[in-house]
Amino acid sequence: MKILSWNTNGLRATLRDNLFFPLFDKEQPDILALQETKCDPSQLPDEAVHIEGYHSYFAVSTYKKGYSGVAVFSKEEPLKVEYGLGIPRFDEQGRTLVLHFKNFVFINCYFPNGGGAPEKLQYKLDFYDAFLQFTAKLAKKMPVLVTGDVNVAHEEIDLARPKENRTHVGFLPVERAWLDEFLAQGFTDVFRHFYPTKTDAYTYWDQFTHARSRNVGWRIDYFLASQKLMPSVLSTSILSDWYGSDHCPISIVLK
Image 1 (cartoon, rainbow, N blue to C red):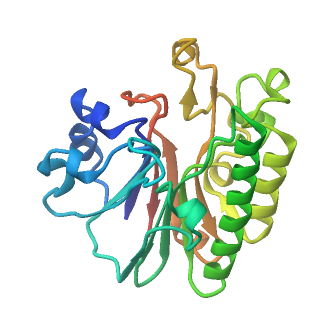
Image 2: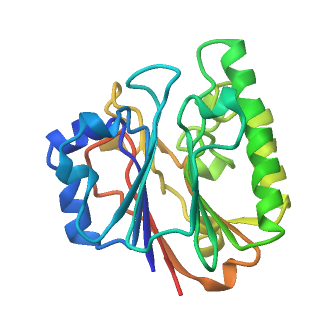
């Protein structure tokens, strides 16, 4: 089973630039998870919602139009789908999709950015805590795979300029400590499991400073697998040569 995850930074723009369907054609994923779709399915062409051979699910922001949003395309139909964490103040932003399959639970999440104001950072930290509780409870019963834009670089190796960003949202000690706690609950950062010392491996680059051409990036997109699922993980990769967003897709292969 091949699973892809990608923050598109606007699905409509990705479609307009003809970089959505070619990804399907090239990678042939069993599951594709998208974050920051910034749209309602009604705003998309039908062929981008009902893709032959796939079941599609969209979590849409009711908080603000054209904001946040996640989607999942899956060849296998899930047994159950949950649209959020069950907490209205988080679910109204359309950040989470939870798909229950026979052998594991798949969670696609676009975590809050937390920048711009103290209350936004607090919202992010509150979301983090709620997400940890939600996933820890699930992981006691079933293998769990979390993917998405977590909006934090975990260690200094995960961004190009750690010293300059120590006080910046996305690399704050409190954010990194949360990821420490999440992993301590029995989850594994799949990329670091396979590539513990690999440098210059990023998934996000600032567009305004043309950082991608210089590979001045951040690794903030993850696959996080629960302990029960890790024996089934065969490989993972960063598709850094795929454009169309300020993030690139990441992939994982399961038995």
